[in-house]
Image (tube, rainbow over all chains, first blue to last red; front, side, top):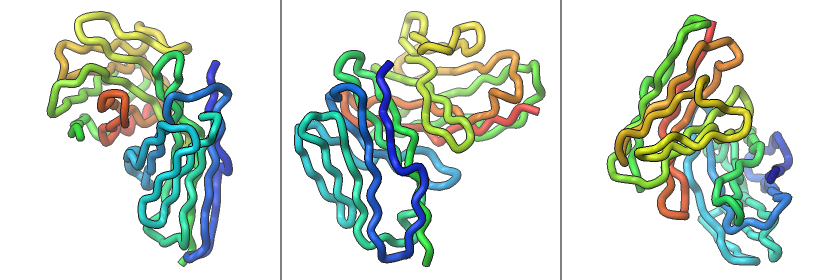
Length: 111
Length: 113
């Protein structure tokens, strides 16, 4: 079946360092979404990317969607302790319309 | 954005019993989904709750174990039946904002002892 792979699984950074998580799908996606889950919380929608090669920014966060619509990345510039949490990508299958979640990247930020 | 109320927020249950989780949305939505998030894991889709018809289950999930109701466009329930410790997870309902994002309830943290 369709899979969405996300790396790395864990990332520890010093506050102020940058952070990137990568997401790859085994099939073409109609769109990709990113969520953040704080410890003890539920996933919160961050952004959706739809177009091939699309780049969107939210303050220190930059999201990219690959040209082939099979991969995506989230980059955080100058991390802060408030960035701590698990970041999930979720690809929407072009075939089934279902959201398939990646395994998530858990970010720890040392002050 | 949709506001989703899910309850209970957490529960500790004895093995062999059943727990019903409720999900209430503040507006009518077409698509409602139930996910499971095992400790330290990602989200796995259990089923799509269909209004007026039987839920559509994903591979590995069956109606006898996870019966779902969807009596109207704002409400759904998921029952975890005949629970075992392996069912200890966070259960989340979500709704789709059109084809856009998914809004999640705050989740139900279930511990089976």
